[in-house]
Length: 232
Image 1 (cartoon, rainbow, N blue to C red):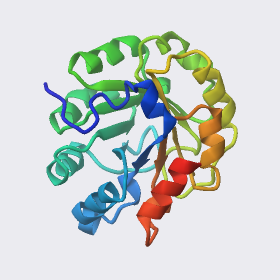
Image 2 (spheres, rainbow, N blue to C red):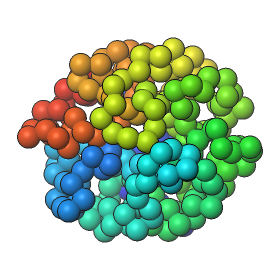
Image 3 (cartoon, rainbow, N blue to C red):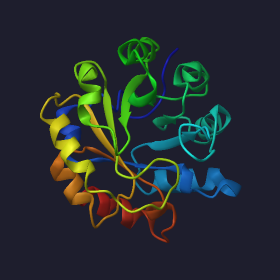
């Protein structure tokens, strides 16, 4: 399955791309009554990719969206890079539906997969990139076996399930530990409570992809917010 999206393999990052962190607005905070308008607006404002948070009401205490929403984003923005974050108990069952819906990257949680390397390889074999995520209480050592193979390491800086939570600084030591053990062609993404006020701290710790939802979609000037996040 051919992957679409701007910037080639965005999460197999060239060194030059790391000079400016990637900014991915989370559509969990978008206006679903006018999703197309919101997605196009943040892309015009300078977003590098669109982050799709998928929740099952089991792994996390909330329900969100499925492959149909991902497919809608693909129709809205045919060339945008779509980053799907599966906060679900059975991610292997949903890899193929999200790939068919246009996902460029699929990230699943380390806490629910017994053989993460196999799932990473399955995602990569499709032409997509693969990420592995850590909840706040999960140590970085839980993903040690994937350090040489995953394209993206997502560190949660809030407890997954709801937008608008306060940033947890306890995520930063995990970012530093992972960054010290991976290459410049692998990315670390921070998700949760990221604002222009703490973005610089995240970047200095080693993050080169920042997810932000309510701060971007709730702003009357998303371009200014995205620039501020990128500057850190």
